[in-house]
Image (tube, rainbow, N blue to C red; front, side):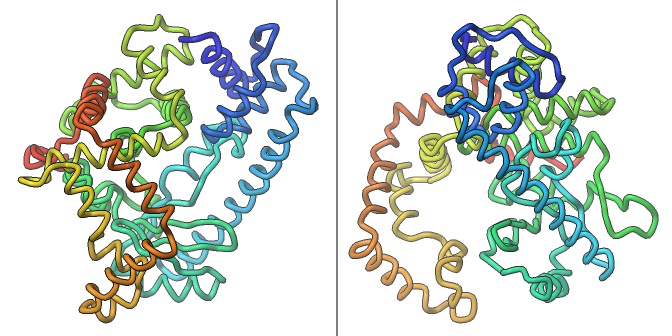
Length: 398
């Protein structure tokens, strides 16, 4: 672990514990604020700096201060919006389960420490026709439908109504969780709000982390989330390990957990924890675009059949699947036979209006060399992660 990484983690621990840590004489202000912004940890680092006696009113912290105040404002608005949704759902007998961010916020000393891009709520798809007019009446704007969620906006805030806990294209984890409703139960008899057991919630969040990790990577905040979760609740470790083994995540779980212990409990580092630390610090909160390109190339190479990874990626860029095309051209939902014409319209737009997009995709394809894809796969395996789509029949629900 580098001196900078240790300083950044000390500031994080200070924010969480309130303890003052000794910082180097020359605090690398620019690196700290840049990393905090990239990792979506600006409020955590701000509170850590204040606890450690750093003058956060100095000019080089102006941007940080502005972003902290904005994040506090967004946190309050998200809290209001979540209450608005849950009250409306309860009043109209809509079954729902709050996921991830809103529940994790409760574990932090201050809710604004845990930034949240969107509000995630699991719903029953068969109730969506009843949900849609409720949200429209509240002033929401309907956006696109993804593989596993309906996306809505309220002013500048995003709400994702999950049809499933895990997208079905993540065949291994989806085989375990299904749509998620077997894992939840009413908070109390007759309630419309559902929740998971603490162990199942942890399993879901860890599988969600693993999904992001192998797709693009993850940031520091995910380690904080689950470290705080395990501190807050007494979990059945045997149950966790049994199910993580079914998910092919037991090795990654042990590496992830020990890395957290190195960061936050002063355990002795190892080669694997140093590797994970470097990997995560070099990422954004949701990894990197380059990792996403290599992940796509790896999947194409492994599961593309007779077509090479790069060729399959090229074909997917030129001919996105029907679901992706309906996002850009909603008319296809009503008249799907227009798909060929929509492909032509998309090519025309790219050639004459969005040539920068073509340049971006060319760089993506150039990145997908066999050597880079193989290194990406080996790095994931070293940390305990792999795509198990070819073994999905052996992954069953608990």
